[in-house]
Each structure stands twice: as C-alpha cells, then as structure tokens.
Image (cartoon, rainbow, N blue to C red):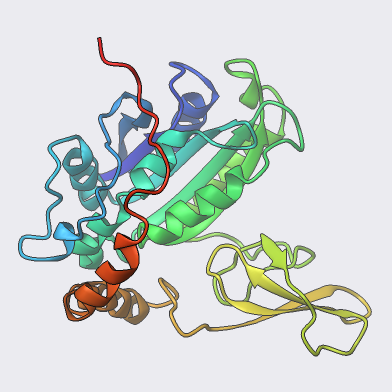
Length: 291
C-alpha cells in the first residue's frame, strides 16, 4: 500500500483545504493510505541561518516539529499540499516550512522525483494572487517531481466541491499523482525549462522587435523572452548560471555550493566584519515591553 501525505496549510478544520485533500485521496485508483499534517498546528520556528543542517549529521539544531514533517515527507510515496489564500498569498505556515528548506538537502536522494501536486484555494474568483506561485515554488524546492497544481475557488467550508471545477481539479491531480499529468494547455504560456506559468517582465535591453518582451520565470528564475508568433504566445527561457532544481545534478551542485559558503565566509571574515562594524550602532531596535 502506498502512502499519500497531505500537507494542509489551513487552520480551519473541515475547511476547503482539508476536504479537497481528502477528495483527491478518494479519487486515487490504487491502494493508498492517507496521512495528514495540518501545518499551522506545528511548531516550525524561523530559520536561524546557521547552516548547521548542511554539515555533519545534517540536522537542524532547533528542537521543533520540522523533523516530524521531514520524516513523513521522506516516507511518503506522494505529496499533496493545499493552501488557502490569505491576503492574495498562501497561508504563512507554508512559507514558514519552506524557509527551513536547507534541511531538505539532507534528504535529497529520497525526495528527488517523488510525485507531488498542489492546490491553491481562494474565496473569490480571480483573487488567488500569488498563492499558486507559492504552491509551485514549494513543490519544486522540496525537490519533488512537480506533477501539477490547480487553483479552485470556495469561501464557505465545503463550497469548493459544490461546483464542477473543484471535483474536476481533484480528479486531475489524483491522476497526475499516479500516472503523471496530461499535456498542459498549449494556450497557456509556460517556461519550457520548469513548466512555470508566472513571469516578471523585464526592461528590453537591446531587444528590437516590437512583439518580443524579456521576462523571468518566477518559479525557476530563468530569463528569456515572450514572443507572439502570429497564432500564440511563445516563451523561450535559458538556464541561468545557478539553477536550483532543473535536474538532480543541479540540486546536488546547489547543495555543494551552499556548503562551500562556509569556507568562503571564513576566508573573508575580517573583510566582512569591516563592513558590518560601521552599522553596529545605527538605529534603535523596537521590542515588546517585558512584563
């Protein structure tokens, strides 16, 4: 029996995120067991930026619930993340977990290629903001095989399944987990390197044709162009100098680069201190009053 790990980034019990995860699970064709984690309930503390998780035993020094999540992610056969939209972005519990992402590199060999899908849920159509981008980033940066993401709408608990769009999205994600996704909509411009569909437009910088625009993929950070070929928009992106997850080799190389930063810091420590000392007494820190 396979295990599906459902990461629910909503504090609302029996809300749309929880119900959608369970609907995807019910639509899986094979023999699966569903394990659930409600991220807002966990004690996931801010990253200390100490880099200790990249060396030695490669374990975070903080004593919180991160190890529990990592264990479940490693042992799962598939991962499904569901996030509600809060002020045009995903609930902060998802980012709080992703901020501890350096710890994922200790499990790169077990996480790489693991089937994973996600959904962003918004209460008002068109007001999902950057929630889907956060879902896409999460699925890529946990080093999994990102097989699909959806945006569905529903404000009231259970509303997400009251129209045809929600069940159809659940059906597509269930199929993607087991059999990979169908070919993406050809009418939606996507990054040819990572499949991302969210872009930032950049200044022209020497591009002459009026139908060409420079852009950067917000999922993998690769730069390229958007061009109208007469029938559709075409995105062309090029690998940057420091790709994070386009291939397994990229992920391993990025882990090695992160580890090399320790030696670089020690080498330039005095030079760096010379810069930071000048700012030591600038400004006044505001802190809550002590009882």
